[in-house]
Image 1 (spheres, rainbow over the protein chains, first blue to last red):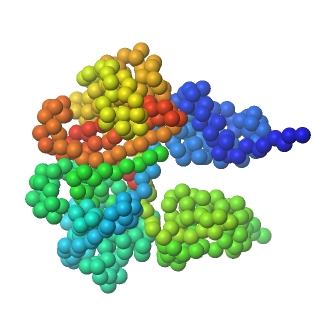
Image 2: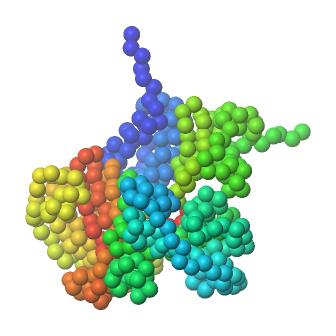
Image 3: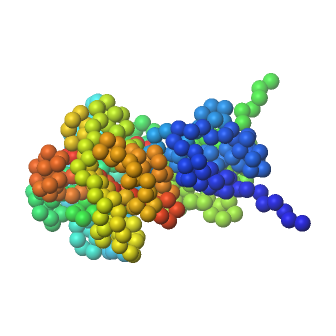
Length: 233
Length: 233
């Protein structure tokens, strides 16, 4: 006597994904109802629902009310980016991490910074400029602004020896994050600090975080020439 | 008589997230067992499991065997990037999309292309160079290689009028995707096609896709000066 194997939600997901990959269902096509798929595959309807949730999270299908599903008519490339603290990033590449604080100053935030935080009123913040190194060579130059109203305790942290990057990630979890990627030519000062030629093309990663509606920090991370951000999915 | 409201898995997730945000649980801390949380909150254990799955997907906690969970000791910034087809991207910004094919040629793929596809043997592929425009101005210059063994039908597509970007996204879903972001200085030819100065700093987005183990396409998308990629989470 053989026992029929119960399909897991991952089996169901893979079967539906396969049908999309082979073109049995094309972008915009309606999929059968959850209940019909469940009957077809002899599994629980909740198993189909879990599978559909996963396919929807991956951006492959769109769920409608009442259990209807269709293949996304305008497919997107969906990628998950994990950006660790810079020390970990350097160490994961097998290199030795170094950190140098360049400047630390309390001053009124410029309009660019108020803008990314979506703040209307000027306020004083802590600006920290620092250099992250990999095997002794400049890796990322960061220009960071920290909101003192949200994180007053940052003033007690010895930022000459511990990077604000690491302290904040460990001590001030965020509930919202904006990321922005663009390229920028090195100006004289940046070229000097990163040890590269003026006008070098540099990848910039800007990150701004909030906890509930309160701004925490915004950092402009200017990466050294040759830096690449890679993600697989 | 009042009826006690059953907590949804999202309620449970938000409560645990709140406890992490307020520092009640710090990076590396162990959370109570699922069963204990379920009893505490008077909900089903499966509700707690669903909540934990979501927190784990967001990179906030780590699940261990036997239902143990801890707050991730090395928190990462996790962001989801959705890259639509370029026509949609332009239209979503309220601009008019345009497309120009520059070159279309069957030739042996150079080692850079074989490398990103992880192929050992040289093979002929279709190279397509094309310009995407936004309101008549250069937006993205793409240098694309398409694997003819996987997508022979691309030879029947009129790529002078339909972008390979769009045709492939709609007709050849992928199961694996590598994305790479970096900055590059415009060389003479690129500057000419994008209508910008030589040595301008440009954001490059490289995307390579496979279906099962078969390479589909790799595209080097060189964006015009000022291009920014933004993601919120």
